[in-house]
Image (cartoon, rainbow, N blue to C red):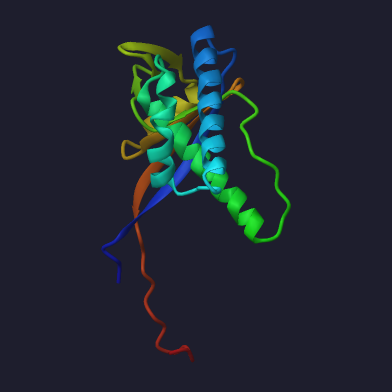
Length: 182
């Protein structure tokens, strides 16, 4: 007997990426600063880690990052909420923590990107894009199954990671009539 529901399977494909262009490197630095600003605002507001409340408080504060596309602002707030939530769990478990911050430049987004002709197209500013070539291994995986969906990307100074997902139907096992469990 199979189930009608399905589950989303997620994986990540990583490829080397270096060096980033000066524009991408600048965007990575700004993303790091935005994330740290959101963390600072969350800590100042009673260790707020709720994404919705943090977004309401932080988004207006991030408007001085004028040349940064809003998709990166939203993802920076989301990353900050995750970091603050993790910190809150550590505090609740009794582990000593310091004020968190993002040390290295990175860029994460789940909006506004596209794969075009074997290249990842990411927004730099309004109607300006950077095209990052994908290596043969990454392209082979993406082309091997047309049901794969690229959900997000992460760029560091040395790597590019694509988060991929696929809908897989759940399989429900039949109950063994001879087992002693009810």
